[in-house]
Length: 394
Image (cartoon, rainbow, N blue to C red; front, side):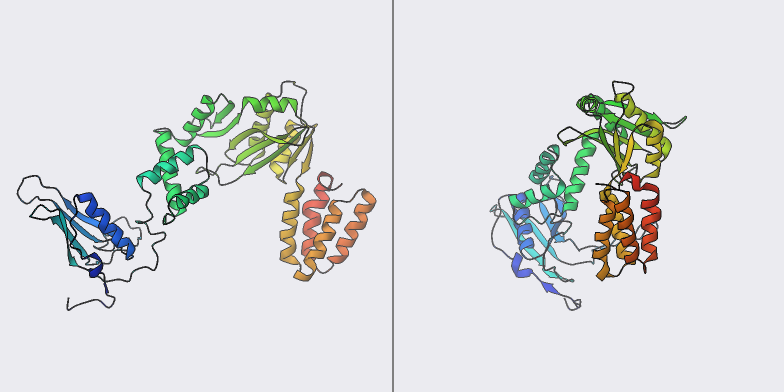
C-alpha cells in the first residue's frame, strides 16, 4: 500500500460485515447493492464451484468494473477502455462452521474517482429479466421506445436504464422473431400473412430487390370509393438499406385520411415513381378512373411521373412544405427586423384570389425585398414562375 496512486478512494468500511449469507445468490445481491449505494460497480471476477477435485472449492472473487487491463487487438481499429487496473478485491467463501457464506475485503481501495451518479452506466443500466419481458410485451403492442422507458421508470423509480438499452433489446426481439430471414424476406412474409395486395421487382439477373409496393385490401376498397384526392410523399432514412419509403394517402368525403399504399424504391427517379404509380393504377377497379387531385411536394421526378401515368389529374403542391422552405430561405437572407413583415407579404401572395390581386401582392413583396435580391430571386425562380398555378389561390 506504500505505492498508492494519486487518486485513492477507500470503500473498505462499506463492505465489511459479520453477516453470513445462506446462498451464493444472496452474497452476490448484497455486494452489488452495497456497491450501487456507494457508487461502485462490483462485478464477479471469478466464480468456482466445488467439484471434489483438487484445487476446486466454493469461492467468489469480486472486483471493480474498472479492474484489469485493456486488451489490445491487431484489428487496426482504435478503441477506448474504462479499465485502469483498479485493485479493488473482495473474496467470499462458505464459513468452515457451516454458518453460511462470509465476506472478506481483501483490498477496498480504488485507483480512480467514483461517479456522482450511475445513470447511463453500461453495467448498472442493464435490463433485468423482468424488465426485458416488459419491453417485449410493450413492443408487441407497438409502444414507442420513449414510452417503454417511461413505463420502466414508473415501475421502478430508481431505474437508470437509458433509451439505448431499450432500442438494443427491441433489436434482439426483432431478430428472434425474424429468425434466419433477412429484413426484406421478413417483410414479404408479413405482407403475405396479412393478405396484402403487393408487387415487387428485382434487378436484372440478380436477387436484389428494386422496389416493393403493398396495400391492404380495406385500403383498396376505400380508394375505389374515394379516389378524388390523394397525397403522396416520401420518408427518408427509415431503414438500413436507405431506400425511401413512399406513402400514398387518400381522403374521404368527410375530410378524414386513410393509408392507401406504401412502397420501397431503390431511388427517387422518374422511372421508379412510374412503376409505383402504375401499380396504384391497377388497384382502381374502373380503368378510366383516376385521382382528380394529387398533392405532393416539389419532387420534380414524382411530378413528371404523375404527368405520365395520370395525365388528367391535377398536381398541386403542398403549401406547408413551400412555406417552410421559403421561411428558411428568408432567415438566411433577410435581417431579423424585416422577417415577420416579409413572411406576411409572402402569405398574401400565396392566398391571392385572382391575377390582379396576385400582381399587386407580388409587387409589394418585391418592393420590401429590394435589398434582398437573393431571397426574391429564389422565391420567383423556384416557386412562383414555374409552379404558382399549383399552389397560389384561396
